[in-house]
Amino acid sequence: SLTLPSGSLTSFYTIGSPRVGDPVFANWAATLLATVPSFRLTHQQDLVPKAPLIELGFLHIPNEVWYPYGHNNTDPAPD
Image (tube, rainbow, N blue to C red; front, side, top):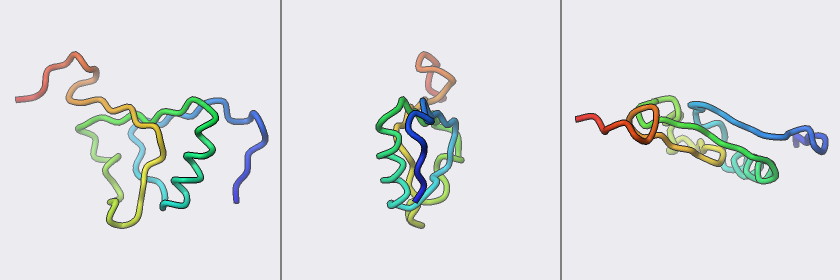
């Protein structure tokens, strides 16, 4: 198992990350990231965060910040 020295992880951010592990890994990451600010930024039109498929056993790590449509929440939805 991977362990990090105390205080070595102060924050964690990803942008457009794919699903990175199985449920065991996702639970381990959630436990580790519960102690620091962590955000997984995703955009509605980005295909990468939708891969690999959940049906193949892959899950995301927490905590998702989802941007619909444009680059910020004030952009109109596409027609």
